[in-house]
Amino acid sequence: MKISPIPTLDDETNQIRQLTADLVTREVIPNEHFLRRGKEAAEVWQRIQGLVKQAGLWAPHLPEAYGGAGLGFLQLAYVYEILAWSPYSSALFGIMAPNSGNARILVQYGTDAQKKQWLEPLVEGRIQSCFAMTEPDHAGSDPRSLRTKAVRDGDSWVISGHKWMVSNASRADFAIVMCRTEDAEAGGDNERMTQIIVPTDAPGYTLVRDVPVWGEESGHHGEIILDHVRVPLSNQLGARGSGHRAAQDRLGAGRVYHCMNCVGQMWRAFDLMVRRAMEREVHEGLLETKQFIQGFIADSYMDIQAARLMTIRCAEQIERGGDARTDISAIKVFVPAALSRVADRAIQVHGALGVTADLPLEAMYRGARTLRLADGPDEVHRILIAKNVLAAYHRGDSWDFGS
Ligand SMILES: Cc1cc2nc3c(=O)[nH]c(=O)nc-3n(C[C@H](O)[C@H](O)[C@H](O)COP(=O)(O)OP(=O)(O)OC[C@H]3O[C@@H](n4cnc5c(N)ncnc54)[C@H](O)[C@@H]3O)c2cc1C
Image (cartoon, rainbow, N blue to C red; front, side, top):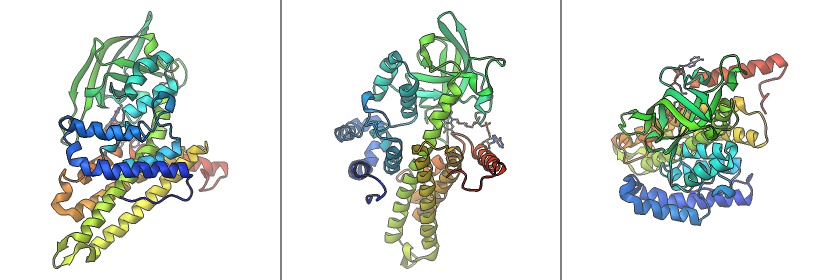
């Protein structure tokens, strides 16, 4: 797949994008059928990871001081778009969720000792992690309702609770657990939670099962019981009561990256769809000559351009230090829905091949549907958009209040 320099970007960012595109196009995409085999193809994984490190692109989301490539927020958004061409890039470039989000939180909130013990081996790929916030018995869409509790006992936190849908749980060496530490009297609604680092081999920490998601028995989304798990107070991540804010910091930037990732997936789906239409013969003609298929191509092109412009605009607002909350919610609703439509059309053009794992389309389709729930369901973001718009109008502002 080809890219052109973007005139509004500086030379350095264009070069990084080109370097990333070369690696993904030459090394990652042609090897997808090997990479799918995981550990069986360890040699291929290691070889490509070596090339990424040589190119200085390993862990692009982290500062150089912590072993990363030190890309800025906007640079990273533009690089995510390219990495997303292949589902294997994030692991090959050391930027796989939830490890990437946890590493960023450790950089921002971790003490020197926490960085040494957890961040360094995480960046080097020697250990894995997960982020445990959602609970089966309380609304994940309203994190203030969560009940997993940490009680201080001498120089320890003692944690009890029930979490689920914790991605990467079955591979993780430590979990960042969102815990209620303050009672109803203390502080505001958003100041009752604290994030605490819990080693997954701590007594009382049990991985109950991998929750099957979309028919995948081992999708690595874990259900966890914490039964009086004792960890030192020094495992507290950030100030007491700062858990909600830290989670919002993580998810805010994360949503822009998720959306740039969706845009990149759309380009890949689009590329596959157009190429298939140019070569597949049906009913005495190439698919590209059929108007239904031309409609799919045109509608997908419009979906991608609209989703991409919205996401870049939002990323630019954040880069300028502006208040992008309304636009983050807007892209979080619009972009995964656009990816659903584009992946759906690309599947249709490929016929049966489209729903096989020989192509990345069916995984894109499932992922896009999942994103309408994860990181805040669509309804919650729509409510936020309407609330902010109405508040702006009541202040006397107009539709472009966020510009
Ligand atoms: C594949 C996958 C991976 C995930 N990974 C993680 C992870 O690593 N760590 C983690 O902690 N969590 C993870 N999650 C959980 C995810 O963040 C939650 O599912 C999400 O926050 C929604 O919470 P819930 O499932 O409890 O739904 P609920 O809060 O019960 O909401 C159910 C539905 O109610 C509706 N709704 C909610 N509020 C309103 C409202 N105000 N008005 C109208 N309708 C409303 C929405 O349609 C919503 O989908 C993951 C989820 C999935 C699917």
